Image 1: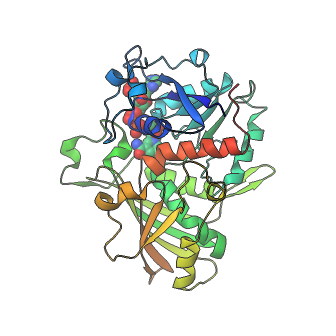
Image 2: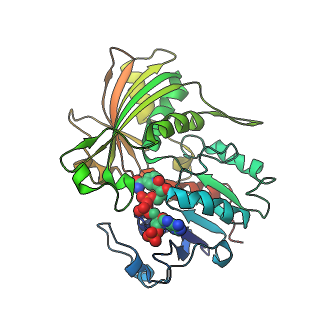
Length: 353
Ligand code: NAP
């Protein structure tokens, strides 16, 4: 099988770097075009990207020349996008309107009523929203836009999905402790974050609340009907390199025992697992038994594309509470976009032309 060529917008950033490491040995996709800002344009990738990952930069990408982000110069129909959100708001619609299928990490188009906000384990059917794009601004030349959620929303919805399915979800309260890498490079100034906690991340709480309702919502003939679950989020930036932790309390619609809740989470599987998609984790949710885990330093890398759930217990205010950990640039960004691309290919929504 020949691979589908892909372009990468924002290839030099933290998420772009993760994408390249994941694509290096990917069985279905081949990066053929890398683009970033004027700062990087014309340079070799190795010079333009400030490489931030422990894994070395794959040698075959090091010498590729970084291109200007112009749709007419991108030879690949499929484009994975990891752009700064201001640039994304301008460039993603332009690429889609020019006929590219844009699979994006950015917030710019996530809440557009015709754009799927996709987590293939949770709401695979929302991909059908692409039909609604055909007649609109993105689809005129056969292009489209599919997004993945914000990095803290994705861990939350994966943990909530089995509870929503099995018992219904009335209310959710979540407090996050988010890694610095979630702010991109160079991110938060050292003097602000070292030895400190910042109880504010611009727009993050609003994103978690609205995105969660859209993802857990129902696909109808007229678009997505948001879930009725009430969600309250409080977001903090902490001095951790990778891995977002979240303390979550949930109120169920139909009461259930602790063992039932645990079993619903542990047995949760979706279409990516049934199809064994290349980037899908065998188990989306892993229950951690140790009383003081998960912890970002020890558990973020091993979590990979899974979400670790620990400290599951009764809540005296709501019904249950737990701590979750997900890798923000992997499950929360690059891996999420790649899994979306794999699901789209499985659904025959991706063609090279
Ligand atoms: P980043 O490290 O700041 O990288 C931003 C990328 O956008 C770089 O490649 C940059 O190119 C490019 N860019 C900036 N301005 C541009 C312009 N005017 N034209 C073309 N390219 C431009 O950010 P990141 O952490 O990788 O995040 C990328 C996106 O994913 C953001 O929208 C972010 O919100 C989202 N996201 C991030 C995470 C995370 O955990 N980091 C998680 C989920 C979603 P240069 O290098 O040339 O400046």
